[in-house]
Length: 389
Image 1 (tube, one colour):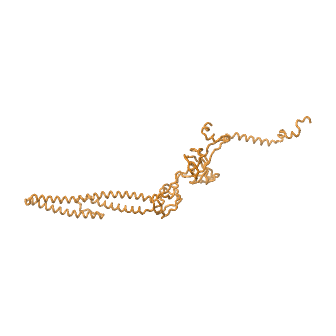
Image 2: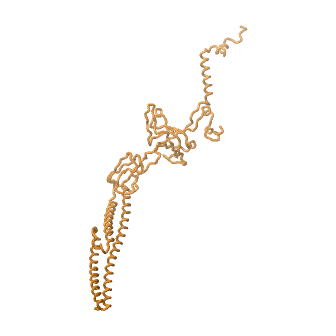
Image 3: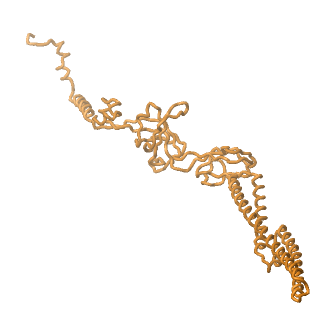
């Protein structure tokens, strides 16, 4: 009893007694846990993860939507398309009637035909000479046919007077040569004949000059009518409202034959067939993280991302000022998609369409687990700190 160092009650609660009771298997488990923790600590600097942030967005076409407007007022005569129909650029959408414009075009056509007839007749009349003056045929217009007949009548009277004076002069010439009449009487006959001849020639020249003036005036009027017709036809083209771009026609309803539309009235909207992009909305507190060409991953709300996955892209454009959307200030950024579809493991593809909503995940940086434990945001946002590290 004197050789005992510790009493039995103390020995039962000593470390030596506890260690002796631990089995070899328990020691192996304990050692394994310690080794695993040590390995994890050692691996922390080598395991990296992406640091990201999120924002809502929507898929939109690269080109903006185009409004279809009417440039004139009137009643709809015919409708060629319907809402949500795919249309080509320049495809007629509807036709607007314009009775005033149709009346102007009809009157213009009638006046052009009249002037063309006048010009054809005048071109024949201005080419006549003393030899062919009584041989003109094919005068189509009543106006110049009447003028030509009146001219021939006046010319016939003048010609008869000229011929009579010529005969009288011929007789008096013989009498003058035979010394039967005096020189003064003969000179009077010569004067009368020359006056008759001059009147005859001036009648021809005066009428030809009048017809030449009419030809010039009618040619000018025809050119003006043709220019007016071109203008009226341009206005007529506006009666047929066409699509400004190729795309899908939207909000085109309430318009049918007989409906009245007004100038500058919006008839519908064309969503263009163009490449798609993602427009995202970043609150002001997060805009400092976003930069050009930043990598982005998009989770499309219409597709379960656990099955379909994500679609990648990058930041194309960052707005320089805020906009109010739903009474909230946001910055708009535009992102380019690497592809326009998602794909299941079996190969089935789901096309991304305009109007689909998404959640954008922006990859801000890549950090190891060790750095994330001890880093602050300033360490990987501040470029001075980043360059030093």
